[in-house]
Image 1 (cartoon, rainbow, N blue to C red):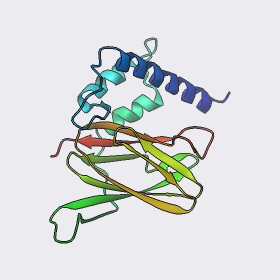
Image 2 (cartoon, rainbow, N blue to C red; image 1 turned 135 degrees about the vertical axis):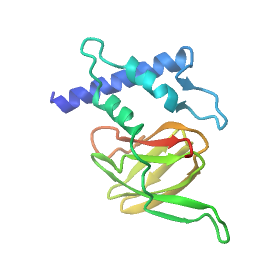
Image 3 (spheres, rainbow, N blue to C red; image 1 turned 45 degrees about the vertical axis):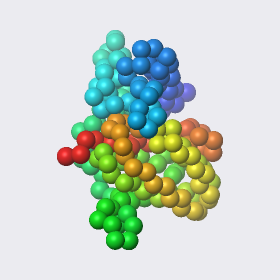
Length: 183
């Protein structure tokens, strides 16, 4: 096996073990009951997840752990556009355009603030799908079509979206939506 495949397998195993331990255990890191009944890894506990998943022999973070850590300090993602929520409204929604490829989502992470109205316009050359249990959505994306979905970011944390059934490559691809406190 090549190095990329080995790293992916190790990352998936670490995630499965972490979810099993924290979901079935004391529930400190993954909240099973929130205001909108979603599962969240909160910003304040993300550093605990990072440190608990470190390789005890070398103290080195996996590429996935490094990415999660980096997301916590990255600047907010600039929306492709901001538009009025509805005619006559003072509120706006932030529109982000995502493209699905065999290698993943472009961009694969979006960083917004709590209370933002978000719209994702997702395009794929080939048929695929996208799901987020955190934001309670699942959509099929037909080939060469754009699917739009919107949601309000009610909770802070790091949330995952991914292909569920019709992944384009040999591997399941995923991305993150990071919701920070409003500054």
